[in-house]
Image (tube, rainbow, N blue to C red; front, top):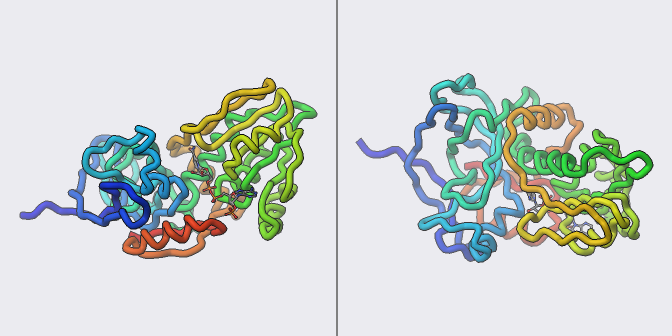
Length: 305
Ligand SMILES: NC(=O)c1ccc[n+]([C@@H]2O[C@H](COP(=O)([O-])OP(=O)(O)OC[C@H]3O[C@@H](n4cnc5c(N)ncnc54)[C@H](OP(=O)(O)O)[C@@H]3O)[C@@H](O)[C@H]2O)c1
């Protein structure tokens, strides 16, 4: 009997979208506490372009001997469950695999993950839309953790890139902790940003109590924070140094099944965005990455493995 395999998109010698290969890899049985998910949808996120381009290999953060997996989040259906797992085969779930240095990812027909790190997708949210939530909504929620509660009278938060995935979730979630949000975005994004309940600007002057940097402005974003304020970035591998008494941090998003369940519920109710630009077959992964690399895309390209 032959070994069963599934298809996965990987890079062996990273060099951009053209270096992505689709290969057959052996099926793995889920151990105790784990589930094997048949992936229905996996979004293309900016981090995937950086992995395929070799950025993190060059930084020494990836040292896979044979191949590096692509893709961080997914939605699909449980196809096998290990010992001690309460999720039944057939349950619709979404989740996140984190870290750069791995030979597997979600640009694949299957993934094996801890059951505690997935969340059941609520009825009323389709798997394609659900797949766009885990990485960026959890990132935003964990950025809000780093911001903490807004100090009384000092609650003006600028969210850069507020029309992007992380920025959009930030604009919607930060008011939970008392922040008054203004979104910095392109002129054509005004309706979307205001629709999240945030203020809107295309040009920000310095003096904000806090800046959450979904637009990856980095030093330019830090310069907008008042002395003694707070800056939270999205690139922990390029974290900025502190200056002018500003508290500086950068998020490293990690899986959190229970929290993801709450975020998916808010997406299902329409309170959080779950934006899809296009659904494409896994075979078109290179074209999808090239399209994302051009910028200006609103909503995710979602791969259907
Ligand atoms: N550390 C972590 O754990 C973590 C987790 C998730 C995401 N991230 C990172 O967070 C970043 C954002 O991800 P994302 O998925 O939200 O990207 P995205 O959807 O492309 O959003 C970025 C947004 O910023 C906008 N933008 C950039 N410069 C701007 C400017 N000067 N003025 C106004 N808008 C501007 C972009 O507009 P245009 O498209 O028009 O340029 C886009 O709407 C990426 O670098 C990603 O890798 C990190």
